[in-house]
Image (cartoon, rainbow, N blue to C red):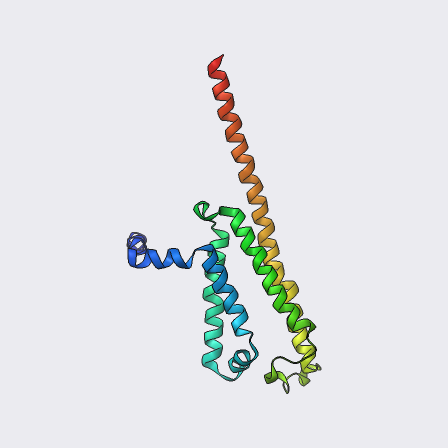
Amino acid sequence: KWRRLTGQWSAARAFAVPWQALTHPVTAFLLHAAAIWVWHLPSLYDATVSSEVMHAAQHASFVVTALLFWWVVLRPSPARGGTAVAIGLLFGTVMHTDALSAVLTLSSRLLYTVYATTTQPWGLAPIEDQQVGGLIMWVPGGLAYVVAALALVVRLFRESEQRVARREAAAEDTWTGFR
């Protein structure tokens, strides 16, 4: 009963049209990228450390945009480019998140002043803390996108093999009919 009700509700135009817009590959990619980059602007990032409301908004935007992004990537629509587009989205995301990670890791300037006095208990200078954070974003953070892209490449090859097998079977059926 609940599944049927949910299906009817989600098929309603008031839900379906915005959902189609939000789950368009370009929209999902841009929203996810914007959430990552905007919240890493120094003034906003510092505000999230000192305000519970800002911190909650930051994480809510990360979660919501990531869910949209991964929905599009893990359920690629053939009508919207399919698996190849999903791989492209992952590649684009690796590129822009690696750029942000590089900025944090390679910068010789402290970007987040809120940490200027909080890193000493860990035995780190504030700039070292920022650089470690950038490295964590860069390597393990980027690894999730690379693993997903590799899995999608395998899917793409399997889809290609299945198309070839179907064409060969159809050609064999046609050839057999002429004998």
